[in-house]
Image (cartoon, rainbow, N blue to C red):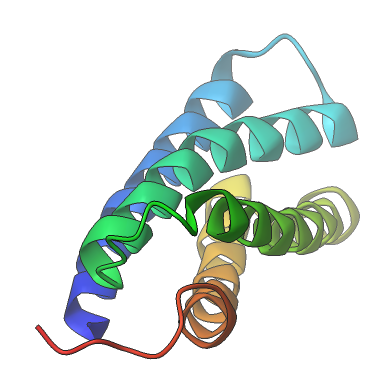
Length: 130
């Protein structure tokens, strides 16, 4: 299960980072607005992929009965992650002056760890053996 999470997490992180960089480089915004919009866009794409890969591949949840419940809980937790991510990105980039790429890698590492723990313990239940 952990290996599957790392595999899909790597793809999720690549989606997140790619969308973030595209937005950061090409959107006609500056300062905090650019940081926030880039982070939210990257979060939107990566969260959609992450839910379905976690649900059906990592945690092997095949029950569609709980799909709406799990999606609601997942999005609630991920909104908290988004708030944490936006706050940390603003602090690191706009207040401290760290390069956006380095800040994104550092923040993403913390957020991935938080998301795994919450997904495993609260959203998708106890691990199931393959």
